[in-house]
Structure formats: structure tokens, C-alpha cells
Image 1 (tube, rainbow, N blue to C red):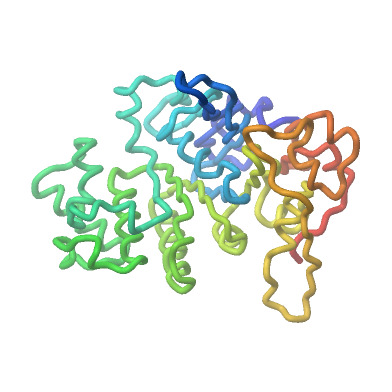
Image 2 (cartoon, rainbow, N blue to C red):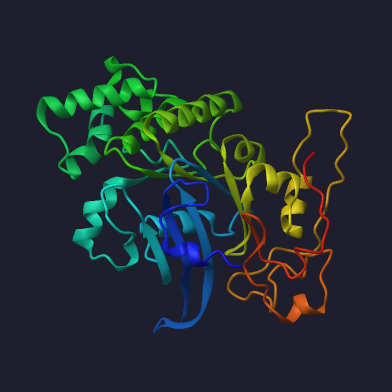
Length: 351
């Protein structure tokens, strides 16, 4: 059974929570142009037929190697970049039926943008150095005509307090703050229009470890207080394990596994996930984890191999893997994978 089974049309998830987001067959291909006439000679398949769903109030973690398409997927979901094909259905509290944002014109898209926001990776380049904290946090409120005058200033002060900053710093510019403080400003900006869904794109990777913990705790507190739903993109598997309710694993533009966090870390169904988990450091010196060193290089998304994209590096590959693309299917309850032998292999997780 695939991720696009009969539950697709229902806003209710299996556990009774509202299905906030449903992505079906999402693709983003970037053209490769050559010559004086810029003739298209191929495509980089950055996001290749992705299926996923996110329930209201949960955090879906997204992991994979650099260049696998995580950030592109997050930006496609927000339509910060235009997807090539597929559907992105949101079931907002203010909408009676799911809204496919890929079919909205600019005016309608602008009306619902306030419901979905993004926290960027780099807290240094994501804030305009010419704007004060007051202007930065107020910008979404002004752009969406949500507040003005005294009400606007009061709302900004409230947001600044919520994220752990001091009101007396509202007139300062970004260069006067540390990386962790800048990321708090970015979070306040994302919270300003009272969104339901936030994409956190490597939101803590540029910060020191101690500051990472503070920002993660802040994100969790905000989620509980405002019933936020997160797509949390990261490289660090320990961060993903800590903050995520479910985890998706991407490889060369494709989703290869999706499951609840404990299930994925303890019982992986895809060989690529097993290899990633083998690299997770263990705090217990008595625990030994055999590191899986994958042969070869990551496949080229502009010229991927036939069959399963992972088969040239897979330790369990057979002839079928070289010629037939694996289907995305539910191999166990709420556990999805794209592997011909997911139901047969016994793979090692993190104990």
C-alpha cells in the first residue's frame, strides 16, 4: 500500500489528528542549458516524485546527504520555488477543504502565505543588515496587513519576549547580536503572522552545540504553545531523533524511507538508512556500532542510474535493483520504504 492510499482524501490521520499537509508525486527538475541558444540538454532531478504527509502539531524530520534535495523540497512545499509537477495540499484551519497551492495564482497564494513560514539556516545572511529588529519582525505583519501603528509595535514586543530577547534591543541592527540571538530574531519573524506550518531549514546547524540545545528547546516550547507543525531539515541525526515525531530519509532527490522516529532508528527498512544510522556516535563506551562504509560516490541527479538509485552503493543489491525502480510502499504499519527487499532484510538500527 502506498502513501497515496485511500487516506489521501481524508483530512484525518490514523491517530485522529488533522492531516495538515499531503504531498503527492512532487517533482522539481532544473534544466541544464548549453550553447549560445541555451538549449536544454537535460535536467537535474533535485526532487523526484516525493510522497509524504504531515499531521497537525507534529514534527517531521528530514535527513540525507548534502545535495539530496532536502532544502529544495522544503522550498517547493512553500512554493518559494515553483515545483515542476505534483500536488501540495494544505488543510488549514481557515479552509473548509484541502488547498492545492500548486494551482493557486499569485494573489490567492499571497493570502495564504501567512499560514506557512520558514526559518533559514544561516542567521547571518537571512536578516537584512539595514533593518532594525523592530522592522525585521514587523515586516510579515505589515506585508500581510495584520497590524499597524501601536498594535504593530506591541505585537513585535510580545514576539521578542516570546523568543527570549529583550525589548530594549528593538532598535538595534543584526550585527549587534550573536548567532543564537539572530536565529531567535528569525524565529520571531516566522511567528509574526501566526502560521500553522513552519519549515526549519537546518535551523541549528550553524550554531554552537550549547546554543543548538537552547534553540531546539525554544522550538519545542513554541510548538506546544501555538500548536505549530514543523518540517525540520537537518544533517545531525541526534538532533533529528530529539525533535522529530517521524523521520523521512532522502537520497538523490527521492524519499527512500519514512517512519516514526523510534521505529526508524530501531528498525530501519532501507539499506541507506542503516548506513546513516551506523555513523551516529554512541555516548555509551560499552556500545559498539559497526560503521558501514558505502562504496562509490553519490549518484548524479542529472544522470541517475537505472533501477534503484542506491543500487551501485548498496551492500544487498541484486539484479532486480539494477533494472527495476522500487515502489514506494507501506512495508509495516506507518512505515514506508522504497526498496525491493524491505520486507525481507534484517537491518541494524541504533540500540
